[in-house]
Length: 541
Image (cartoon, rainbow, N blue to C red; front, side, top):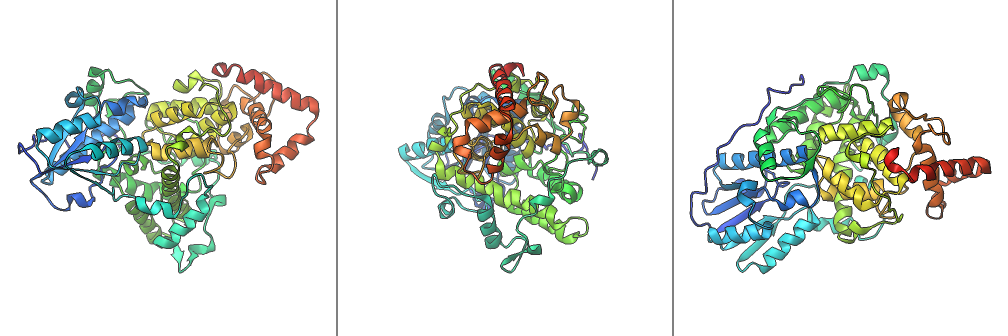
């Protein structure tokens, strides 16, 4: 399948206004609940009105990348149109329609009154703040209200407490094995297929020049968002990032399934092998292969529920079964672990620990996020590239997020609230339930190890090992204390030493401190002094 930017476009739907003046029931569909397979839609009811609404409150709780807003608005419009075409009664409201309502509860109260509804139903939100808002509205509503499952995840909401407890440290590997057994994925009886649960050690290869030449073209879409851009301007919606008139991301089920097939055929054979690799060659061309590598880029479709995780896993395993000589077990296991394992894991962590999880700051980090996180204008090439790519595409893969931007924030002691807001705003797939445990937990260790068994801190050596960023950087990755030494090197040691009381007894990090103690005192002092100079001027790095 060849990549294309203009042949796979969205279908335009003309929605009729609701055909009745009154409805028995109003069913709310949030922007991340675009699940066409939900049991709600198995039968058509002329007295049930489905409501999908663009809300001003959702544009202001954090500043979003413009492509994230475009994608949500267009996906919501597409879903509303598809429901209408299928014969359901649908009311799709844009910012023009909802601008006079202070928030979602006020809008719902008005609609329930206007259409004389006796029943209000909604799917359980995946974000705590929306769940609280709708729970409160439903309790106060004088009619009958129902909260139903989204019917999307492998685990139901009520099952999460069987696997997760508040403030308890949980580990992905244990959880992942339980779900592999329960759902019988890549299993031979009670043992893992191939004899191993995890092929992570085989999936950490760096891209060599010949590998970069063989990278596939990403499959892009040509979704017209000019009307949305005009609407954002009309309502003075604050946003950032590159603002195209055509959106490259999939915004309906047809497009998402095409992208899934593209991944399975073109990318999955080398997905695991290079899933941690990074390259900066050719960043500025929209058709470049380097920004997407072998990643599926299905996270937006998954997190808006356009695709179900079961469909994604089943489809990928189906291709693996058909072509075992092309797709190795290590590749498919690495992908299944991301969907069945990590995605379900962070959801469980989130709901077991909210709302106090959002205030966790175990390392007492308090520095401000550098201003260049909003522009990418830093001399550090790894951060320049990862941030510029994020601003251009509203996307970076998991290692760029964890070990480039996240690692810098961790070493620099940036306040977790600011880190959370940046990640939640900039990425097209960022919804709080998945963003916060990844950021505040895995990346920043602000949760004191609930998610991660160690702090994912790294010097420039890791970046050099997994990418070609360092080759064209203004800083020298092999140096620690000179003015042109890679900032990550001294910041890494400063971080480890200032938190020695916390990490010194961690068996996974004991070797780090032994190496430090072997250094001459003069070298130690020079390293820490260089770090302190950098910490005093983070905006100038």
